[in-house]
Length: 264
Image 1 (cartoon, rainbow, N blue to C red):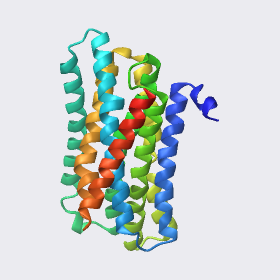
Image 2: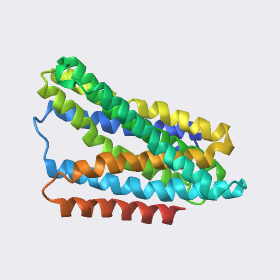
Image 3: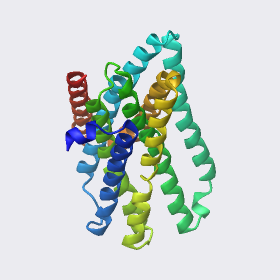
Image 4: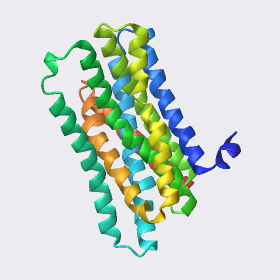
């Protein structure tokens, strides 16, 4: 099974990997059928662990290969990577600003409009995650240090893990809004469907336009770091056991770093 996956086209690999991350969102959303509330320690530990994985992946699987590729293409290495990294963060920042502006009068919205805004917020953050996975798989073709099938799979795993609480974070509040369990589940999993779409787009861009690979790699890293700093870590640190959650972040980073370096 593993050999079969390795032999697939990078675009197909990216599609399958991001379908996996979407399925984890679906599983997280499905908890609305079984629980009214989810243990906060478990949810926050997963968020912290995923944050650590994504921070490590941003450097070892995205920024480091971007630096190597930019150098091999005789680009101004630091400039290209810096521009890509900042651009990734700016895109998500602009999306957040637009969301907040639209959401200013949220209290006057109907229940369904509040539902749609919640879905939009989570979906917005899933776009760079799908892109990052696609870019990671597409870049394997160029034999860069750090760009391996193992590191790309680990990145997808890390994103999938943090999609689990995201799916729950959408479906459970929607249930509290008065939606049926089936509708809450549907909207919860829907937030992750953009990941396969942007995973394929990311892989296609990398394979078709080699010159933009350093920018795309660092762009995906910047977008992911923004999401981690703005969403995952602050949300996980609302837990009273901040020390334990911080340790899970360190654990996620350490595991990703060890596996990434060992498999490169």
